[in-house]
Length: 156
Image 1 (cartoon, one colour):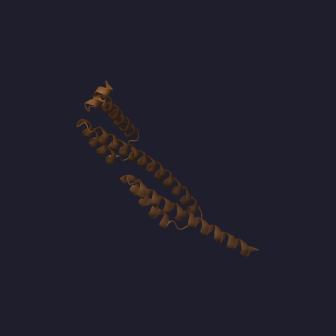
Image 2 (cartoon, rainbow, N blue to C red):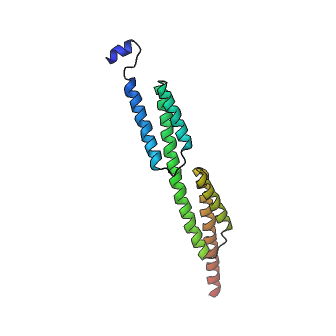
Image 3 (cartoon, rainbow, N blue to C red):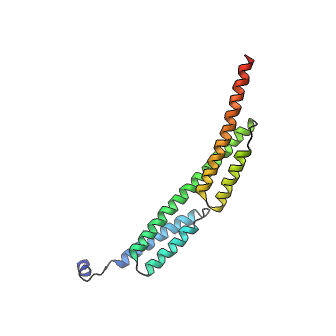
């Protein structure tokens, strides 16, 4: 049967390909529902276009679009997780620096910016600012340790 389709230039497996692509879309939509706290608006709109391509029987184009959506979704989820963990790390470092009476103005400003990007769904930018908050807090801890070492040396 497949050979007959090849002779006439028809893909007799189109129904199977369409269903396979629809299943892929369903899996991606399921992932997005599980992670509903993440902003997937771009991926959602691309999946809409992939469905339209399927309706128009543009299976190869739809497949490419779905693959791009999968990659974007995975990247977005990874960045989200990275941002959450980096914000937590910044808060821990800032707590240490606060115990040592360090100046946290820069770290707070960077953390505030990271949290704004988190809220808006711009996770990549948020990670950058959260990392700057970590570094600013670490610098204050290092400053304290350096002063502590210097003070201790004076006692001798």
